[in-house]
Image (tube, rainbow, N blue to C red; front, side, top):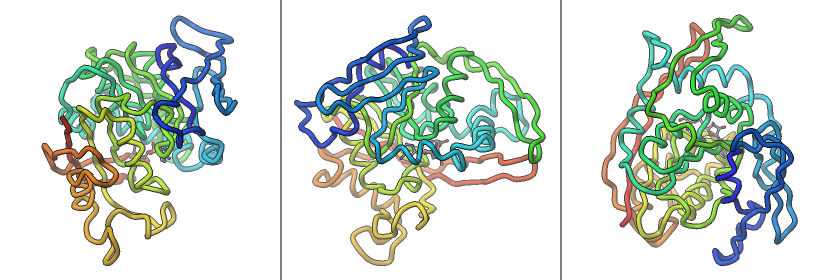
Length: 318
Ligand SMILES: C[S@@+](CC[C@H](N)C(=O)[O-])C[C@H]1O[C@@H](n2cnc3c(N)ncnc32)[C@H](O)[C@@H]1O
């Protein structure tokens, strides 16, 4: 973890305190390489909770989130890292099937002073895009292997990974990245979208791209995104396919896709309403600047692709 980020983190166990009581974690550095803390720890001066930095990766999650981090299937698996590395960076592989989805999400962002937060960053493409438009960009995800892959791209400043052809058969792929990425201004940590270890109002921009339907409590995720965004002037990039899944979140917590209840109707209509209302999660309110749909794809193997339509909006306040 870069030193500049270690100085900004607060305790995810203590999030229910007032913003005035948000005290930064204390950093202990055991090993560092250039500006990167490779071995160390972070401690909360209030509750005493400790968070490790191993192999450059800081894991700053509340204790209840640790089982997700330790899960090596799904987003924690090798095959998923290979799939997402292709999906995020296929334009740099000169792949005839490439997707420009992440470039399109990034183009919707307005350049501004301040920091950007990419919530559920996976292997980091949108975070790196955000370094072109913001002073600094931070990507967070609960997948240790995604964060490891994102940090490898950031350190090597190029792409090199094993692409799955079939089963265990892989092919080494490499490519040069956009020379406009400001790698020194990006960093990635393991953190939970429902307990963000950042101070209230810290970010000028936040993104929630294809993660809402993947968290057990979608409202809590949005409420955390709102908490860390500046209350005077902020930009929110939101995108989701709204493929609600009852194995991820209870239908009573879905923010759309219901025929009855407070969130009946379509997810995008409900999120737009919540952003503009200003008396619920998003206070003060946002105004919607742009809406649309982005065709996005994930390559599972040489023969298996997932084609997804992700509905997006850009919302601004101030
Ligand atoms: C469908 S993927 C989308 C990733 C990325 N935003 C993109 O569009 O390529 C969902 C991501 O959310 C992450 N995720 C799931 N639950 C999370 C949580 N509670 N906190 C942070 N990240 C989470 C997953 O590890 C995964 O990287």
